Length: 202
Length: 317
Image (cartoon, rainbow over all chains, first blue to last red; front, side):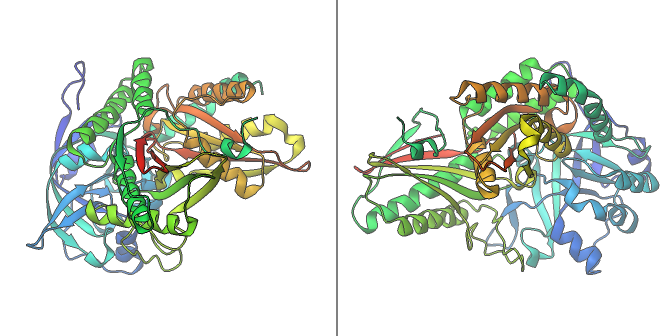
């Protein structure tokens, strides 16, 4: 959603090619067309802790930390009821596996990932894209269809293949150069702490 | 003197947004209450309170950071999109927390009341295809109902002499609930220790609870009561000051201090980190100085109903 003084965000297409992922820089605003894969805690535990690699090629994939509400139609297909984004830090220890083993090139989430995940992104040439957490209703409308669902027994924490259009806005907040907007904000908050304490008379 | 018990039920917004009728005799009452509960659950997840909407637009008006402004407008857009489409605002259906204010002149069987409200949550989950977010803590088994042993969570208070029942539902999202903090400070840590703890908690939480947040602070009581106070604090309409002017002043200063950190909307920088700080307190022990922080995300989801003994139901926030 661009404001009047905001240029229309750069469009990316999922899956991403290597050069595109590596060229993204912290501060850029993008949106996505094409395919995004939804997963979260239970999905990643199955893949990496239980060693069940999904029967799909996730090279270049854009992953989304989500567990949607979806309605199963009579024909067996799912339609989205509400698709939003969950706090990424819970899935932090799976970042390296996602970008190195599965070959994903972008992780979409909210709240950011750790410094060590940032290093994994650098090593793999991948990025972290932040969505506005909690704003699931527009996000749901940007999902055109749910094309495939794997690990259905983990409902709602399955591996979901979403076809999306104008999915975003997404903010590049951790890039393949090792920049992190989250670390910059935390750093500034620590610097601003003296001002906050002064307000509190401490 | 106002009843202390009444003081323990969260203050609720006065506006009535809809009125219905339910039966009042025997099973009809509990069937009616189940339906009220179903309506409250869907409503809380879909239609955000007016005070939250105002808080978003005030934050936008005061914001100069370009990215923060875009993020606040996405939030405003999500609120409008849900108004228009009926899609719930966030995919997180939360953990249902009920604050019950039971009028002493409202004839109700409390056990059946709790059952009826739980049935309403299950009914809404099925009717609206809501994601079930509730699992067994050990097996992680999900009954797909958004209920389970001990869920919904009930905070029960009695309202002296009135013939109505107040139901306030907060479907509490996990992103913000995971950012809950308790410290059993010493009396010597004083109020300075309390202020430091709130500041450190919010800086530590950073982007994770989906700022701008409503920061609930509990002061006093026991460990469990202190956190319950913090939870009650987040259920208050955004920015409604505490009636005690000293507490209200502390709320104001804490909010100003938290916003000075510039953690900002979504923890990516900007001038509004907390829409408001709300404090609730209880007396505590001479050797104790407990402080609890319970954070509510930017959506501040809640819905309420007042059920009169006549069967008239007034909905609001």
